[in-house]
Length: 56
Length: 156
Image (cartoon, rainbow over all chains, first blue to last red):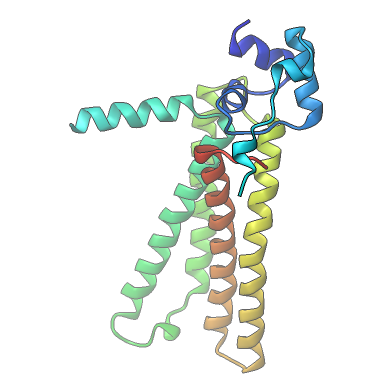
């Protein structure tokens, strides 16, 4: 599935999909579920917690 | 070198979403009109006290100029990207909210400053221009925040 196809499926712009993929934007839980659903994968397989972004 | 920079700018521009381009367009229009307003004000004063300049007509012309510039740039954007014009997704809305939130602080500070000017019974030139500055600066802060989030990313 291309970024454009995924974007259309979940109703966002291609740039938003690129930003999520690049770790520049954290989607809402609802959108995260929509992405996982669109990709046919469980949520925890698509998204992972990055502790390096929260460690201070 | 110049061609390389231009092609890089064009590449970055083409990769932007409609809403980011829109933020750039409004910020650019605001900066152009503000520069025109300040330059005209300084020219009309011509060495005399700036508060003696009849600024109200200039403000009206500036508002019309801003509306025309913003409309023209958005027509061009909408024509070049017909599918995405006026459509905002979750990221656009969240960045917009954060931008408005940050801009609100500037607007609030400007309001207090204007209130102070009214309390000391300053000339209406300064009160009017303080309101104008608060509006323009808060909008620029809001747009700048949005652009920064689009460029650098924001885990909000």
